[in-house]
Picture 1: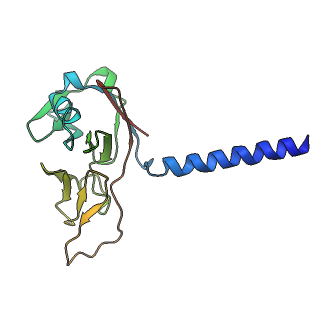
Picture 2: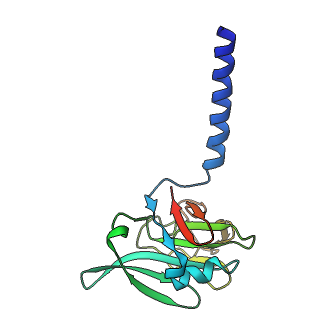
Picture 3: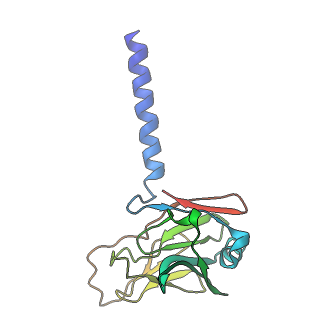
Length: 177
């Protein structure tokens, strides 16, 4: 009986260790939970249907009214915040949502992980990169890693983008952690 219990315990520990390795690529640093019907948001409809395209999503206040701004290579729109979205979490600086060249949905934080501040947002390029205007580091959105560092940069840390889990069923886009 003791051997069975010991074997069961070892198996459980082995499986949980494997599970930790799989999810460690995802960040829990900031709260992220939102869901969008891509058919209601032209920017998400564009990026989720075109490989290697990404949109930024961020929350901000305009004249006392909370808005969600979505921006991609073809358009930028301010959408009204509704009662369902009041508890949404958009990470540190907002979100970057899209699909890599293999068609896998991706979600990263819009804040530069080197500067590590909400107001240090990345600028997206049409060719699948994101660049910080402050530290100058460029990240590849295909996998979230550092692509280029300015030669004179004095970086306090070197890390890739904060990545979040994302579920996508062909219509509903659900970033979360």
